Length: 164
Image (cartoon, rainbow, N blue to C red; front, side):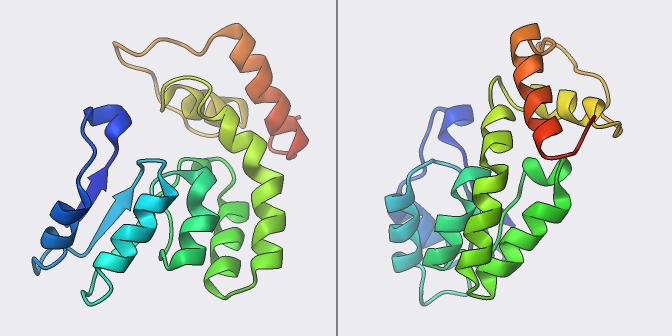
């Protein structure tokens, strides 16, 4: 089992002491950390260092810094659109090749921001559609991506060669 700390969705931020205690439970193997707080990630890593417990980025834009502190990967939104780049960035960082990882991070950072112009998964589904990938339909209460944000998202996809 993997814990998922996403305060923007739940309205609650898991306290570090609770995470550290849960890290001792045998079937809890890690956490997808999406609080947006890099200092908190550091504290989680500090407090679970003696456990067989992994920290995984839950925020694409923080994946590189999280890995640099000892995180082990990402559960990614952007990987649905640019899997090759995301995979190369993560693998480079995990191998200690931060120069390559940084280059890819900065290359895809504008797309990552565009994928969160509105509530996830709205922009991700639109990006998949624009890229010619299977995207599925939005279900209520989600609404289509605004026209303004669709233009911004399409621009970032074009810059990366994901769509024409």
